[in-house]
Image (cartoon, rainbow, N blue to C red; front, side, top):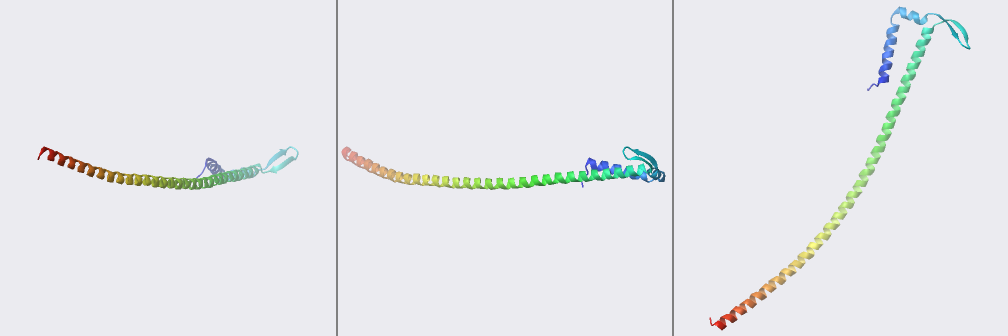
Length: 157
């Protein structure tokens, strides 16, 4: 459990009050009679002012502790609300990120298909070009053979 400064101060004041009440002669000061004059209410005699002050202090301390606890609970409720909002925001961002990845994957697959079809088209064009090249080579070899045969016949070999 984490203690804040207000709780520590309240505990110190409670310890000091208890330390003050332990000696018997101090208890007599709490119950000693006094004459009190309250404006509008008149004069009262034999009033134990120390007891009333102690009760007032205890009520004030209890009120302080109650306000402190209420404030702490309010902060925790606010932080819990913020955490819930952040969790829903994270879920929405994950969902949006997932759809972006799906779009990217679809685009890459479409582009890969286009590239494969281009390579296949170039491959078939290259196969046709290779066949044409073989035909030209054969024709050239035949022409060179005929020319060689013609030259040998003319030169008498």
